[in-house]
Amino acid sequence: MHSFHYQNGSLHCEDVDLAGLADEHGTPAYVYSATTIRDHYRRLDQALAGLDHGIEYAVKANSNLSVLKLLVDEGSGFDIVSGGELRRVIEAGGDPGKCTFAGVGKTREEIEYAIEKQIYCFNAESEEEVVFIDQVAGEMGKVAPVAFRVNPNVDAKTHKYISTGKSENKFGVDFEVIDAAYERASKLVNISLRGLQMHIGSQLTSLQPLIEAVEKVTPLAVRLKEAYGIEFFSIGGGVGIVYDPALESGKPDWWAAQEEEHKPLTIEQYAEGVMPVLKESGLKILLEPGRYIVGNAGVLLTRCLYEKKGSAKTFRIVDAGMNDLIRPALYEGHHEIVPLNEPTGSSSSVDVVGPVCETGDFFCQSRELPDFVPGEAIALLSAGAYGFVMASNYNSRGLPVEILVEGAEARVIRPRQTIEDILASEKAAL
Ligand code: LLP
Image (cartoon, rainbow, N blue to C red):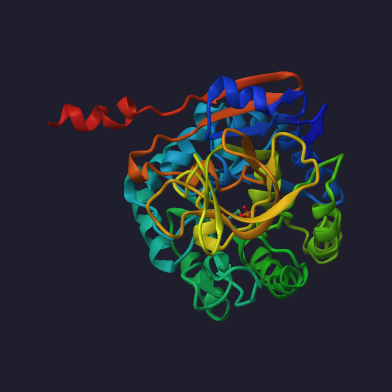
């Protein structure tokens, strides 16, 4: 379900007119739909109803406290990758006892903090890390729950920067040596072996690699349960979304033409695909979805500043840049671009670019887009995941405002960062 649609000629998020938000709060602005986030969480939960499962929302996808709070209220657990993310979950009212802690480079401070807060489990990425967690836990007089992340050496068939399950990737312990790693870890007295984890990559649009990995790793999970009494098997996140306009009504012609080639992997297909094998394991199954929950629940609003007609191309220069949404520059990510004023039919081939001084600062190149003119605001769709969280102050640009919509209500959940905010700590050091 998506809550972005044209109503009375203007793009709305739920019942809120986005042009009004752009006028009131300025641009660039991230806008999220609370109803969509909740709906995605519930759809996933329901699709897995036949399985003893737990959802650990991947905080890295969108870590705004109000977004986390929504998911706390749904009963979600959380997959975290830093002490900072654990702190966010706690600030949002989440239970550390429902948190798994992933990542290849956990520091002593982070490990101590997580042990103190009694997280559900560390998902360790190497034997060296497990030995260190054992040492830190021992010094604290505690026993730390640990799972290994196994690298199943399966090609996730996604962009190379977000593929994680091949042996040349830095993640996890090689499948071939994982039994021996558990055997050695079982001798350590300050850890308990609680589970097994894998994550083969992000933005998976085909089910086959995931099924291949699940079929390869489930027998291992069952063996580990018998040998060491582990209680969960986490199959990671990675469910892909369709980076399309996802408009519920008034789909323009230029969108309908593309629809066929962007068929989504539905969450129901995903669940049906993995459940039969997982059910037999008798283990609790954890999932760590990020993008699926929040990706299509957010847009980035930006205003067109200039149109520049070059000899080779037409550039529409907007007030958002790669510092606000880096996905096109970093992963060749595609985001649909729609004007807030409902298109009338005329279109042209343009590059939509930002103000940052980099050639990679573009949102699309030579794309046929419905016409919009300087002064008009547009929306970059599917920007709810890995959007704001990856934004930076490059070019001394402030971070955008974040707004959460629910029904007819819109609430600022993080104010726009000002240049004063950016300079404060540096001025203090002058
Ligand atoms: N679990 C682990 C261990 C992960 O590393 C990730 C994502 C997830 C779960 C959540 O994956 P998701 O369900 O969101 O695909 N910035 C990139 C994506 C990086 C993903 C990193 N790990 C992008 O914008 O495409």
